[in-house]
Structures are given as structure tokens and as C-alpha cells.
Length: 238
Image (cartoon, rainbow, N blue to C red; front, side, top):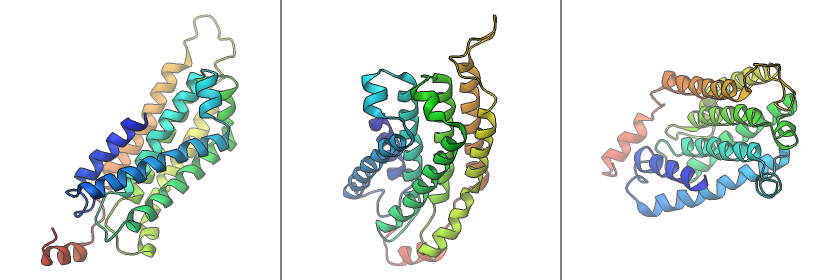
């Protein structure tokens, strides 16, 4: 899963990163290395919520925990990859918006955990349907946070203002909290003929992701800084 996520980050770096990164192997390797280290935050963040990589996913063979961890990697990759989209004069133009996106991502997931106790469903009840819904939300919120972090650099203050487009992620999380209350734990005995919740959970997870993608498509094109690009062209750097 981490290698697949880094593969996705690589595609972003060679196609949508700053003009001085897309054709520079040393910069691409640098941002891949930073991205790899960034993915380690998933283990720490989910462990804080109660989902442990070693204890739950590996030693206990909990597939629900594995689903949450893998989709968590995907969501955080979207946060970091989005921060790499657009032009900027240096590495801080990536780490600053990536930090904003990641902090927002973790804050919203912590709110979801506080409202739904999803970590208990995943680790104690081994509820794979709950893990699927949780995973869909993590990917969707990561996509919106990554979109908010994308764009050409102007200043730290301007980046903070432009990051306000992350607000739909808050609405998406609120929707997920409401939807979570409609599902019973998979361990609860179902009535005869009642289908498993996994297909409905998978459908809901896709809805979360599709809503995020629809918002990204609606909000394009990404903000640009024409003055910065003009200066780059005059100096023969683009």
C-alpha cells in the first residue's frame, strides 16, 4: 500500500508539480522521500485514535483494521500530493500547505471518531463494513484537503485564505457522522434474509469519494499566479 501511494505521488510530481520539479529527478526523489516519511503519520494518527498497525492489523489479523490503515494511507497521500500541485519558489511552498491539509484531515477524522467511536467498531468488533465506510471518508476528506492545498504559491497568508475551500470536507464529515448512525454493528444478529452491510457500506464509501471528486471538478481550474509564471518565462525557466 505505501508503494502504491508513492506511485500515485510520483505521477503527480512528474505531471502537475512546480515547473522546476517535473523535469528534475533530484527534486522528484526528494519529494518522494518526504512523502514516504509523511505517510508514517498515518500510523501515529490512527494509533492515537486506537487503531494499531502491529497489534490489530498484523498480530491479530484484523482485516477491518487493515482496511482503515490502507485507506488512511490513501487519504494522507492525497493531502500531500495536492500540496505539490502548482508552482512555487521552494520546498516550504509544499510543506506549509501539506501541513495545513494534514492537520485538517486529522482534525476531521478525530471529530468523526469522537462522534461515532469507529475505532472500537474496527478494533473490538472487527466490523469490516464500518472500516469500509471509515476508509471512504478518509479518502474523500483527503481529496478535498489536497485540493485546498493545491495551487501556485503567493504568500503564507494568501495560502491560508485560499485553504478555506476545504470547508466541504467539514460538511462531508458531518454527513458521514449522520450516516454512521444508520448502521448497526455487523456483530449484531440480522433478521432472516437481511443482507450484509458490506455492499451498502461500499456504496456509501463510493458516494463519499464521488462527492469529493465532483467538488474538485467543480472548483477547477486551480488558482494561478500569472505574475509569477510571467516572471519565470521572462527568465527562461519555463
